[in-house]
Image (cartoon, rainbow, N blue to C red; front, top):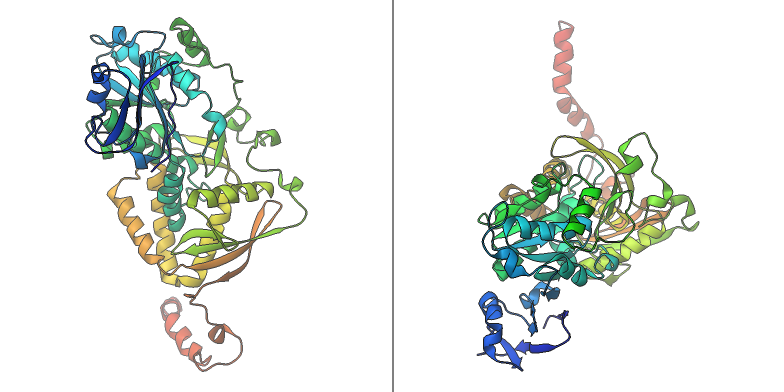
Length: 494
């Protein structure tokens, strides 16, 4: 059974249900009740489709969504403003019943909660996905959500799903955007948005919301996923609607609505972190001529400060998917996390680039992808043994389009899914191992082996062999060069 954690917002818990058992009120879950069933009428009405454990306490409704979804916590409770007084009738801009908000606990999303309640007269369910951004970003979310006026907080651990179902398919495809970008943020948005659609269905929400600005790529990535998976959901994008123009406006709005302002130090950079990478934008990086400051980096050391002794790692790969490190098998997320630590120690995976955003403008970003850089090099190198020339050329050409689709948020587009089926088929024999040397920011391939290798030493050797007759090359060259010879003859009037 999946392990769940529930957070209570009140001092007394009156109802708890644990473990699967048939013929109970909340679908298939065993209820242990210490109060009359009529007191949780609202919970039963909203949770009849759920398969999970629940806790109900005074003025608090806590619900866990299906057991195999890796949910860590769900909470609801009183906020500074009575939900019932907000949700009666409509808001300033219309009426929605319940909105699932992509929530980080920062200033922007904390302000969005009361803004949604005020403008759409709705309950707000805050949703946070753990895609490997770090425990610090998850600390205290329940208290922040309650203080902002949310009726529920749902936290899902999506790390394994993120790596297995999103990162590794891109890795197998060789997807890289504009020669450098390994698509860290691009891959994370669809897995988060998909989970939001799932939560919306589970809690009976009729809308979803995000805190993406109107100038970036992420708004497109979220909303295309919403459209693909549930076109009936309403989408609210506050940054495209409200009058808040910056941090000071947001702080003023928060104070007006009694929302505690996060007291964390404002970073001069805009960052996005997950298990695959860490991106940096803004401040001095907005001028492409400026060198990034060394204290900006968080996942990797300066290559000049990396160990003076190189480290060798052996990556095991099965059908284009990494499965092991130095002979030890790991889960997808564990493998990536381990390589992030190793690669970061050696200053691996720093990329500084100017990219073309989907919305038309150019932007400059600096990315740290230590583990991903190691894996990308390993998979690509093994393909040099297992794929022939024509296959590699076609695969590389399709990888460009694959990367464009992922970058543009079209993860659930039938075209990407069809291309992924090709990538899966073409890499069936990409199985073996690759040894890499990590040294002061560089990744060098030192060895590769595969039972499906198309490399034959007896053919490739400079020594004479029975299979390859060097005399055959003369006829091949005459035929291969015939078009060039004919053109030259025409030019010379021959």
